[in-house]
Image (cartoon, rainbow, N blue to C red; front, side, top):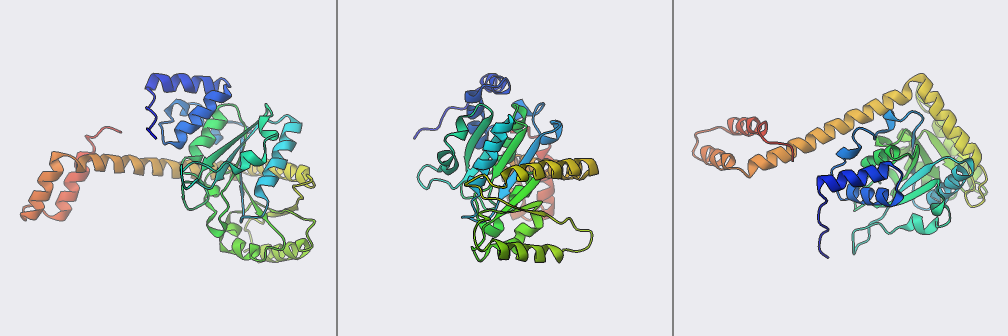
Length: 326
């Protein structure tokens, strides 16, 4: 299949303007561009969770089979009843043929996905470890900029490695499944470190009581002064407990905002993104220098013993300042 031609800067700006004005079709195209790694500068003056007062980014993670997608659908249905404009980014496994998302969540939520106050988008994980697609953070910024103050990010669901969601979310919900056997061990392995709220889904299952006791025991062992995540129960298939969970999310974030914890989390996130973007910029500049005649000369000088490796590296670094951003 031939690659799609890259849009001109003018075309990208026009598309971004339509998306910012509320055009859902344009938003879908912009998100596709972001997923392909396109420049998102058109949203730089508009996007970002921290710049939108009252905006939320909620991570939803947990092991496969916990019912994350069903719970997400129930939360979206509740948001629609409240008239809360809410979007969901569902990071799905990649198709081994096309590399695109398998679109599991959109197939499971056809009714709610057509509500004018709800927007559901699947993104392909493209095999990335950590549970998120590479451009998830840029997509979240885009959604907030385009008037979606509530954004849920559901991870692909890969167990203990599924912790990257903490780098994009204001609040992380870890969904557990009673009777799964290994859920609590998975939490100890990493998810316990990032959970703001635990949800025992399928709470009508006979194993829910045991899981609740295990979680309480784990939380009790946290060091003094450490944040202790709340535990909530839902039956996502019936909607039981979903309203209380929504209220708990809002209360948790309101408290985090009052205490300054939310600002601190967003500041750390912004700092990480700046460093990552700077690192990517430097790598592109170094690659450009490595393709230049200068590099050929440096190689020959090192080989001839006329320049040390440290001097050669310093020469390369110095040359990077003259390379424009790519």
